[in-house]
Image (cartoon, rainbow, N blue to C red):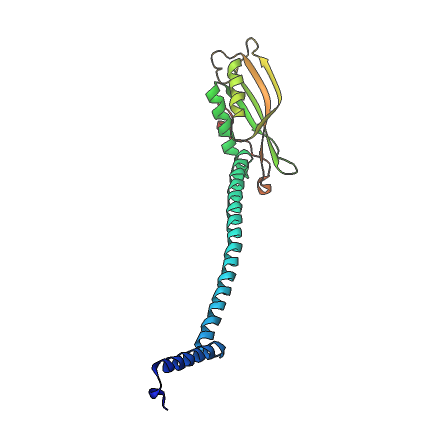
Length: 209
């Protein structure tokens, strides 16, 4: 009896059996599309897991990079502040302008401003200036207050203040109300060893008014 002559339900059972056998062979044969698809799925899952681990690892570095960037920016700001306080170069002309501007704003006359020899320290260089000045007493106080507020560090040493003696004269007329005269050493600082030669005295026009 041929397959066509068999009852329909027998034909259905035979077809279902053949279909199951084909599916089973497809599952078992290593070259079958099903096995290939499964192998690719397993590989994709492994790749996804590996990429997820890489992303997590890179996320840590991203956070650390942000931290390093913030630290670098903070250190740069600190360095900029320190360079303003203790500049790399001695900037002699700029320093003289700062001092004379403070004196002029306070009503104090700087009679002499003479640069001394640069002294080398462990981490910086000191540049001293011998200063003679006079003016009203409270103007002197205001002058020292202005010096303390300058961006550049300036120390005052060897200071002596005295009253104006009767009959004392100066080449430049004294300001009205001048009551005291002073002598002191102003010391400022810089950090560049290549600029550590002896400071030149300022020109007469800059040292005297």
